[in-house]
Amino acid sequence: MELFTLDNLVSLAMLILLQAVLGFDNLLYITLESKRVEGAQKQAMVRRWGIGIAVAGRIILLFILMKMVQYFQNPVFSLKQEGLITGTFNFHSIIVLFGGVFILYTAVKEIFHMISVNDLEHESTGGQRSVFSALFLIISMNLVFSFDSILSAMALSDVFAVMATAIVIGGVLMIWLSDRVATFLEKNRMYEVLGLFILFIVGIMLLSEGGHLAHLKLFGNEITPMSKTTFYFVIFVLVCVDLVQSRYQKKLINKQNRVLNVG
Image 1 (cartoon, rainbow, N blue to C red):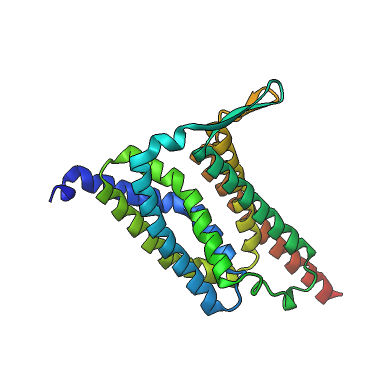
Image 2 (cartoon, rainbow, N blue to C red; image 1 turned 30 degrees about the vertical axis):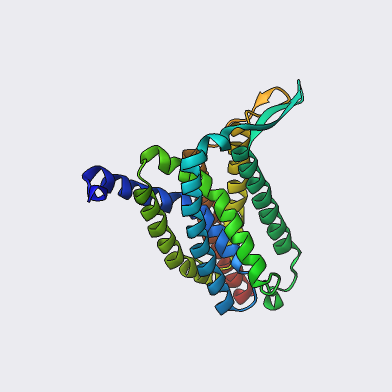
C-alpha cells in the first residue's frame, strides 16, 4: 500500500507526462522506420511488437541502471589532442553519440531518397527491410532514447514500481498513437519532409548531449547540450514554417490555375 501514497502518485503522474514528452521523437523514428517494411499489416505489427519489446527492455535497463548507474559513468577511454579534440568517454556518452550518428544518417539518407525519386506515383517505400531487421533497429534505438528518460525518472523518484508503471503506461500510449501517426503521415505525405527534418534535429540533440557527457572539446570549444526547451522551440518553428509555406503554396497554385483558365 506504500506505493499509493500521495508522493508516489504525484511522481507517477509527472513520470507519465515525462514519458509522453520524451517519447515524441522516439515515436516519430518508429513510425518512419516501420514504413520500410512491406505491407500495412506487417508495419503495424512491427510498431506494436517493437514498442512492446522495447518497454520490457526499458524496465530491465531501469533495474540495471538503479543497481549499476555509477559504472555507466566510469571513463572508458580518453582523447587528448590539445587544440584539436579532447574528451573522456563513458558508456553513457558512447551510446548517446552512437544513437545521434545513426539517426542523422537515417534522416539524411531518407531526405536524399525523397529528392532522388522522380515518380511519386510508383514509388514504394515498403519492402526495404525485413520484419526482424526493422524490429532490431526500433528496439535498439528505443534503448538509446531510454537513457535520458530513465535517468530523468530516477531524478524524480527512487521507487522502482512507480518508474516501471510509468514506463508501461508510456508504452501503451505509444502503441495507441503509433498507428494514428502512421496513418496521418500516409494520408499527408507532405509532412514526411517535416518529420525527417525533426528527426535530423533529434540527431543533433543527441550528438550535443553525448558530446557534453564526454566533456568533448573541438578546436578548444566545449560542446554544450541542446536543451529540451530549445529543441521544442525549433520544432515549433519548423511546424509554423511548414504550415505557412503550405498555405502560401496553395494560394500560388490557385492563382496560377485562375490565370490559365482565363487564358
